[in-house]
Image 1 (cartoon, rainbow, N blue to C red):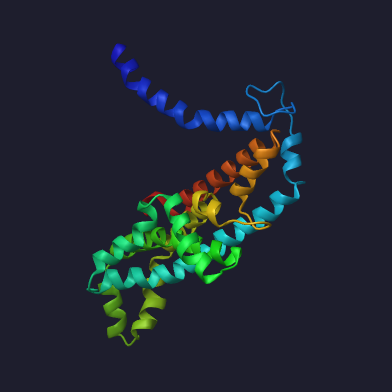
Image 2 (cartoon, rainbow, N blue to C red):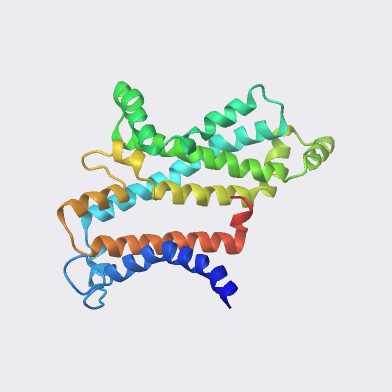
Length: 259
């Protein structure tokens, strides 16, 4: 009996640590009170409904969706050929390239955001939207390269050679043979990039500006002036959205095989 307790106690503590904040946010977002507090005095959906009526949330949500979708697509357009080249050919300095590509993951986001602002955005006088798009694409690129590379490494290279021997060009073999066989990895990379971009905070904090902000940054700004439970309600909705996307990806794509 004592052994079972010692075995399950760390698991229970880990689950409480991981799930506890989520439960607190959900309950706070369903509060019937007027202030952000836990435990709530009662339960109500009024703050969930109010989230959809706040204009700044709608605008920043649209911006976050734009960056998440098109930033991820741009990262895949750049990452798929790079992954293919490093997987199929002996590219000089490929390990150095992999390290450089992975640098946005290794380096803290605050440093990346400050560096982009100081040495990229300000000297080139980029618009806020373009700066955010370029930054999010750069942040998602390492995930695209890693996930697509994993799919290519698990794919037998001789099927491409067979297609070439049967008369297909290299580009034709790639689009007709390679790409369809790694579509699961490509979709997984898209989902991972989408979730990463949508929830991105440090870099977006440096690059956002007047009238152009992502949803997480807008939520931070909203909490500086208003302390009602609408932010908690929105956070809970976003958490459910992320969980739903990952669940569907795991159910239909086997998401964990690629990440």
